[in-house]
Image (cartoon, rainbow, N blue to C red):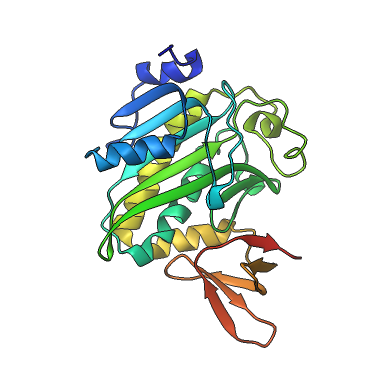
Length: 261
């Protein structure tokens, strides 16, 4: 296997400011999917914090099986194994915590007021998607045996495909600066460790409160898998509470979300 590009390999020479995230850290030039690789490693006993980063993916994916634009040399594709003591009903909270970590991680390059979270798993700059989160869990009874936290961040691209140009952005386009993927990876792993530790130690409320403050879905009319309503709040389990037109409320915990107004 060839050596990954310099802006990723420099990660190995810099000290990580973490206790468990990125320990160990595996760098790959190319893979099908970092989430698939991390899942296989977790099944083989990889520890809490085991992290895989790739320069490019041929089968990167987001929620609902969508392909994630994964060219070499441009973006950050990272998957982290966590072994939280959470019930399966609490799994959506991991996605929210990871989204917060991404928002935290890009703060050195983008002002906080420009960064929002679209429930449940997109991070946006000025309304355009810059990152996505895909959490895939392994269930044992009513507990999460482990979860793979997959994160894709658009970092260095100066252009985007026509199909994404009006809905997505990159850190380079949004900041006007050339950004090192290694620098983003370091801030991301530190932020993810803090957000996951907070979730596991302090319970869901701090995570829900922080996401709610940055969630651009709240107050808008949305459709989630055919259910329409106004997004009122994020629930204690990480779901989205919708106020229907008849005044009733419905909690949605996952699904395809479309903003209507």
